[in-house]
Length: 220
Length: 206
Image (cartoon, rainbow over all chains, first blue to last red; front, side, top):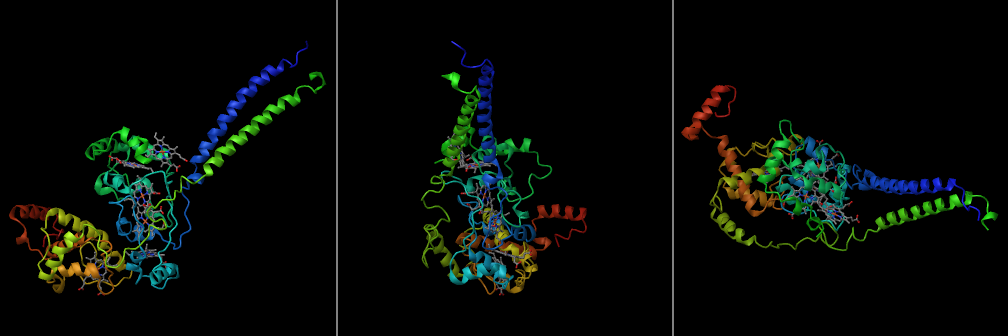
C-alpha cells in the first residue's frame, strides 16, 4: 500500500498544531488587551453634556469644595449630582444671561430636572459605595484623577474588576490621612506611602484581604 | 482513491480554513456574548434612574428629624442661643460645613470677600459688623433656612442640626475677630507672646 501522505506532512502537522495553539492564545491575548483599552473601558472619553460644566473653572479656579455639589459623598453610596437649585445659588446672578446656562434656567423655570450623561457607570451587578471609601482614607483623586484640571469630565481609571482588586489586595499603597481626602495634588511631597500606608491601614481598621476580595463584597 | 486527488495542497488548506472559521466563530460568539447587556442594566431602581427621582411632597418631614425640630422650634421662639450644648465636636463640624457651604462667598474669615464675590456675585455684609454681632444665633439659622435677599436657602444642603452648628461657628468667627489679648487664658497667652516675639510682623494676636 502506497503512502497516502508525503513525509513532509509530519512536520506540517506539527507546525500547524503549534501554530493553532499560538494563534488561539494570541487571539485571546489580543482580545483581553483590547478589553483593557480606553476604547472599551471608556476611560479618557468626555461625554456630551447638556451644559458645558467645567470642574476646572469651579474647582480649580474658584476653589469650590466637592461637597458643595456632591453632597452625599461622605454619607451614602452615591456621591450625588447637584440639583438645578445648586447651580442657581450662584448663577441666579453670575452669568445670569449666558447662553451656555440656558438649559439650567429652563430647568429652573419648568421644574424639570436636567439630565446629565453618566461618565462613570458600573454594571448593575456590582455594588459600590462612596462613603466607606471616603471614611477609610481613599481620596477622590485616587479614583477620579485630577478633576480640578478637567474642562470636561472624563474617567481616568478602567473601573474594571482588576482595578478594584489591585487596591483591595493592597490598600496600604493608596490610603491617605483623613484630612487629605479632598486634596487633588496627591501624594504630596514628604509623605512616605511605604511607611505611613500600613500605619493608616491599622488605624482605620481596614478589613483583611479575605473580606476585601471576597466575591460577595462587590457582587451582592 | 487518493491517487485521483491533486497532491496535498487541498488537504493542507482545508483544516486551516476550518480553524480560522472555528476561531472566528468562537471569537464572534465571545464578543457577541459580551454584547448582552441585560445583567449590566437590570430593571431595578437605583439612584438617578427614572422612577427614583421623585420629589417628596411639600411639607414632608424626614423620619428621625422631628426629635431635633421640637427643641429647635422652642429655642427659636425663646430666642435663646442654641438648642444643644456647644462642644468642641459641634464647633469642628460647624467649621467644616461653613467652609464647604458658606466660605465661597462669605470667605473663611466671614468678612464677605469670598472667591465667588471676587468673580462678581453681590457682596454680603461682613459678620463682624455691629448689627450681625448683636443678632441672636437663631437669626443665622433663619437666614440659612429661608435664604436672604440674593442669598439662596441652604436648607437643602444643611440638616437642622448642621445649621445650628454653622451658626455656632459664625459666633466663633465673630468672637475671634474682636478678641483682646486679655481674653486669652494666661497659659496660652505666654505661647502667643512667644510666637509674636519670634515673628514681629505676625499681627495675629492684636
